[in-house]
Image (cartoon, helix red, strand yellow):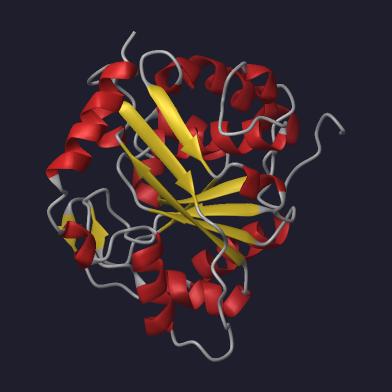
Length: 265
């Protein structure tokens, strides 16, 4: 790799590699140390093509969710199974991983700007700006940027567009799927909201069971399924459909509590 080789967004890959290495080393203990990340389905990552993959996930914090994905994806690609043990996987990270984020979030301070260089596709939210509800048209340049990222590699998106659970899936995600026809891989995370503050930067509580489940790619009929069909499938796949709000049985709660106790150190 040339010293000044750039990706399609103009980011120098050598610099991006070192940012991922350093930031990955600084954050590793957040998922293996202070807390223990329980991973399931990492073998799916190894079988994915190098480009045109879209990960859809529920959202719990601004940054910790994405950081955990960089760890899990790179650990899986380096041969680890459901584990981020030993951070040697950060030495040669996958450099074409991108994530969709709100432009205003990624401009709010130095740290978000550094994180943005590591792979953010910063877009303008059409429904919210500076804490207020708005109603804006989708910018075609934002759609094109997502397409460019899919053409170059993997893209992570949080289709609810908010860290509040059980909010509706934004139709824009379904439009992107129909337009660019990526492989769509659902991810379900939990425990991040209890572990970290809303931004995902400060550790709020230790010894919390964090879970990270990678599901099999969705089988989508890109031509015949409607955006409404795809929205509903994503809603179920990332376990954000209202039906998941049902009361969790007491036995299941007790089992989770016991598992949490075993994970304390």
